[in-house]
Image (cartoon, rainbow, N blue to C red; front, side, top):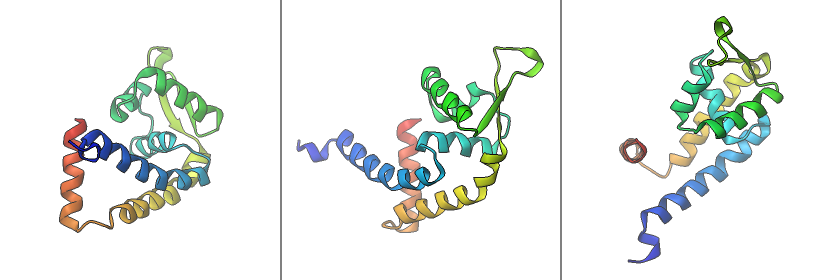
Length: 136
């Protein structure tokens, strides 16, 4: 088998290319790609518990903790503990985060279209479904 036929190689190279396209866009906002995913999840469901964000983004608690700490330091979110229960930390967007919401989501949609533009519409749907099947 040729190394270019190993699925690990193919997916890694595709990931590098897509990540490389998205990273500069998020840097304009002062965000990492992972931070932007956290914001996107909170744009959809404001006030989610930190554990739920980790579950949705498939992040271990150590990784998530570091990402959230940097986002809080950067003024993107604030944490609250409902009813004083320290075991649960809800995440809330700041004005800074809400201020970029529409522009960032528009940029993400445009970048998705651009990256996937090499495919026909039915191929895009199939690719997305197959990739989701691989990680679920």
